[in-house]
Each structure stands twice: as structure tokens, then as C-alpha cells.
Length: 393
Image (tube, rainbow, N blue to C red; front, top):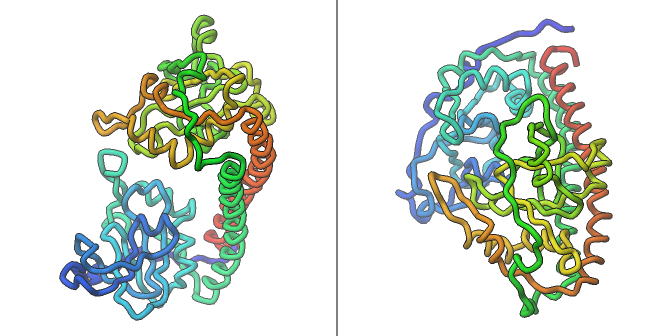
């Protein structure tokens, strides 16, 4: 283990980066580093008239740390200039110095070592109103070896992170492949034969509102309903009576819909409960129930294939209908059983639906393999970061 020099973050925080009101320059093009742009993976080229508020002026090599929704780790290195003024949202804390390597610094700001300390600086009332307080962030001590050592560490972490990025891209490609197979299988230009969803559902039912406890049955919740399939990596257990279990037990082919969420795009998100997937993860699929924020649709599989139905609901037409059926209350978006049942679904030939489902199952097996590999890489990367910032790499 090498000796580590520690410094306060305040030494590198830019207190007065300068501001600009882009709307004062309506025809000027800016490179904008916003929080949504970060989530999309690239800065945004936009004109002054399209930006409604004042922004910070930043420069290439600055490192940005998001202070809003701080549990989501966001650190961004400002890229090279492209002949335009570079601006950033006020939700970024800006760091600038010749004493740090920007890549090293950005890795540090999303590490477990830093994030634990960072979260202790947070204040607010919850959700998107949570923010880290820069004055307290500035008091955090960080390890800062000599520049050559910073560059060496950054190079190692960059290579390791590239492996994770490649795996994530593979997962995105496989996800897009499912949609491409759907388009290839069905004639989306002719969906004239339609019927209400309720005509292919034997039963709709809301889940349990019982609270999770250490003992009970595994209960699927909103985080377990991913794009078309059930994810059991984060399970809670909920106690229910025998009578409740009889009503709420999940069977192979049941479709679970998210019925309420603060984000309207998540309402109606659905997944198929497949016993083979659950058992492959090491669980007894006969013992699963689901929580109250979900609606179970038990289908008549002689009329519709659950995997094909789910993919339609996740596509553009299904999402459009779900948004139209959503209602709002106290900042939450909701859909009820009546609204779900009224959704109009295409009456595709059942043989085509079954063929599509078989192809999807093969693709999802590849998704499962790649997702497990990514989880392993994430664990190794976190360990690598820990050693790197402890001076043990």
C-alpha cells in the first residue's frame, strides 16, 4: 500500500464559473451539458432561443458532478471545444484544476468510496427535490496521488469500464433485436382486426398491499417488472394468509402491469411471469405473489400469447394507448383494470404469435447470459475502484 495524499474537494470547485443567458443570443449555437443530455450519453447542440434559463460557462477538461437526485451517480468530463461556447446546467458542481487528471477525477466521483460521503451531504424532502449541498461536498477529503499515478489509474479503470460498456451495448442490441423480430413477424401496417384486451383476459386482479417482512412469500414489485420479463435480483417477502395466496399466486404466462408511478412512461410497463425463468434463478415458481402497485392479467392462451401481447404493449402503439388511459392524482399516474381492459390489441394469428414467442425466448436466454456477465463485471469494477483509490492498485 502506498502513502496517499488527501485534499479537500473545495480546492477544485469552481465558485464563479461565469453565467450566460442563452436566450439573449437567440441565434447562437451552444454545446449544452445538461442532466438529460448526460443520460443520453452526449452533450446537446442547441440554439440560444431554445434554452429558457441562465447556464454556467464551462470549458474543456472540467469535471461535472450532479447534485440533483444524488443517488444516481453522474460525473462527466467536458469534451473538447468545437468552436462554440460550452455551457452547463446549474445542477452540476464544476471542478477545474491542473492538479488532477479529469478521467481519474470522474472515476473517483462515482466510486463507492466517494458516493458514501457524498450522500451524507444531501438535503431535501425526497425524490427529485433531493440535492447535495456544495458547501458540504467541498469538505470531503479525496485521495490525490501525483499526476502520473492518476493517469495510470485512470487508464486501468478506463479499460475495465470499456468492457462494461461493450456488454451494455450488447444488451441494448439484443433488446432492439426483439423489436425487430416483432416487426418482421407481424404486419404492423394492417392491424384492422382488433379486439379489447379484456376479451382475451380470464381475470384481472390487483396485488397485495401487505407490508414486506423478513418472513413471507416472494412478492414481485415495480422494480421486478422489466422490459417484458421478470427480474428477481431484488426480491422482498410478504406474509399472506392461505386464502390471499390462492387469489394472488402467479402462474406461468401471467402478465403483470405496473398500475401507478410518478413517471407516466412507466405506467403499463409489463412483464410475463415465466416459471422456467424463475426456476433457473433458483426459486420455487409456485410460491410467488405480487404487490399492490401491479395488476395481474391471467390470459386465455388459446386466444393470445403473453409474450406477443407484452411486446405489443411495450411498442409505440401500446404505449400511446396506455398514456391516453392514464389518470393523474397527487403527482402519480395511474391506470386501473377498466382502463387496461379497454385497450385495443391486434388480433394477430396465434401461430405467428407462438413463433414470435419462441424466437424471443432464445434471445432472452442471450440477454440473461450477458446480464449475468455484466453483473460480474460491475462487481469486479467496484473492487478495482476500491483498490485504486486506496492506493493498492
